Length: 200
Image 1 (cartoon, rainbow, N blue to C red):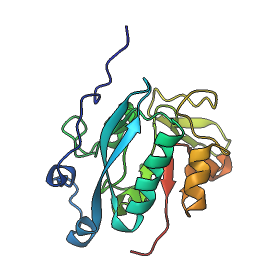
Image 2: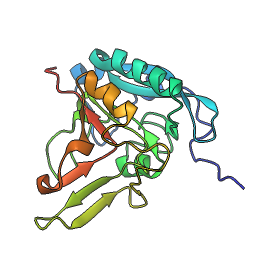
Image 3: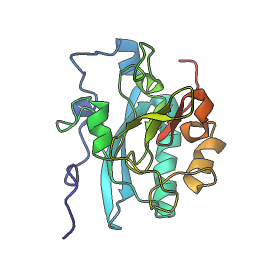
């Protein structure tokens, strides 16, 4: 029997709910006002068409809408697409990743640092986190951290991103950087992550 995804019955969220502030880490007004709530459609892992909501900076909203249209056209499967303000996630990046959720804006720092993530500006997106985990390495190239913990990177698995994957190429052509291009000597590889470096 197929297991029900925790967010399977999520519907497109209202803008005010999608932009609900994290009381523990409220975004400055100028950053919050720059975010756009994008209603998108996607194909899930069962081949069903579903509705989702993703929040990104308005300067990249066209990219993201085009991305979802493209992924639907090539039947690239997505597990779920809900903002991190969703009641089942409550702005917790680890929870979002454990749900294999695809998301954008999240006013937070980079894990293990006090530096703001590109997600904090709405200029980053994470896709299918269980198929595309974030991995950190020590100075000897040994893996010391993986998020989500259950994440498994297998380029032959559906929904996985890799160097010549059409989804990766699509975003890179639009000026996005892919975390899967980062190297072990840099200390981390982030297969789920894309960011666009804009001055905002």
